[in-house]
Length: 206
Image (cartoon, rainbow, N blue to C red; front, side):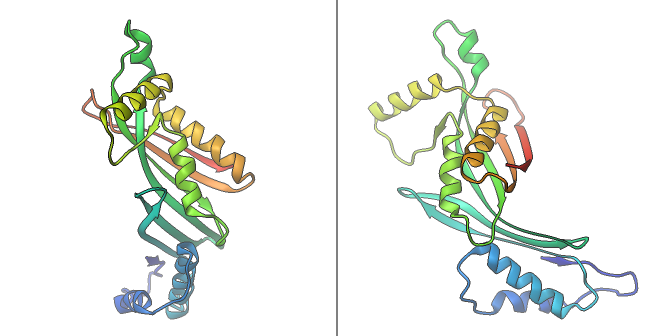
């Protein structure tokens, strides 16, 4: 949480931020809750014209799956932005390895999508999680037997994707459901063969 501070003020009272977090609220949508807190901060800080509030929690979806859930609200340079976001993990299979090995083998790694989309309490975050999952070579699974593991690995190698492919698929899947909305997508591949990670980003109107 933050507000802008003019040059003639030394600082703000931190308790104003903490008090807003302690107020019981009936709001269900995390992005709407972020807005309520942000507007309250502006009332307490009469000097402020810009405000930023980002809330984070956990979201259960599907069968025993958990994602990070975010609510974001800000006013910056007289422009208002309210977004809901999720962070979802999945699997990535390297297309180059599949192509270069004689048996179609590859190295696999976990990957993550962090996506935000503008919302006014009209976007189901669980739907965002499912859209993100569909964009990977394969979703993650909590528990598998050997036969299930075999099938998933075979499916992953039929569906190899670079991290930029995963982001492109996420954009396409979002566009099918939320055409015309502003969105930001950040993808990370936690490389298994290299001592670094790769990332890809997209933002714009779906």
